[in-house]
Length: 250
Image (cartoon, rainbow, N blue to C red; front, side, top):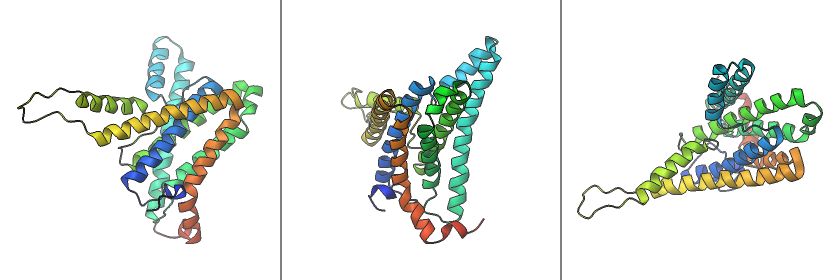
């Protein structure tokens, strides 16, 4: 497999490529999540908090808010389902762009968000809810891509799980093993490195995204979309050249 960035989404994978792609997508997710909060006042990858808010609002009798929360969860689920459909459809046709295609959709949605984001301030009552749903869909779409690529080893929006795994390995690393004990507690340094890199990438992306939205506004998502396009164009062009879009079993 090529180490060139435009082949990082190829179906031919190795652990190094998975980590490079995972860190890049983590940074994009962090930037989108943090920047999106500044844009619409809502974090869109935090499904645990959103689902908890649904329960709170139901108990408090805030049915409209509860329904809105359910819509966000459904939007995230639809994003994940879309990735599953696209990847499985593409794999049955032996396409090299099986993992690239959902990310191309994400790039297009981010471009729409960035280019037409100024309309939100003019038609806030309509566009803010739609934008939040869109961002939740993007988070589900992207997280499912790297989950399928890495066989659930890497996730890009689920930082709670990443921090939990990081804490477990740090606990093992700092554990004091008494001499003479046959089965020592040993940290998995590979996992420790992977989770530390992913968390750092998400946080770094969040800083860049927050600064970009604060300084430049919605147009700050355009560079994120361009990065995604660079990541996917190799496999997609290869499929187009070889006519794989029209071949293979259904």
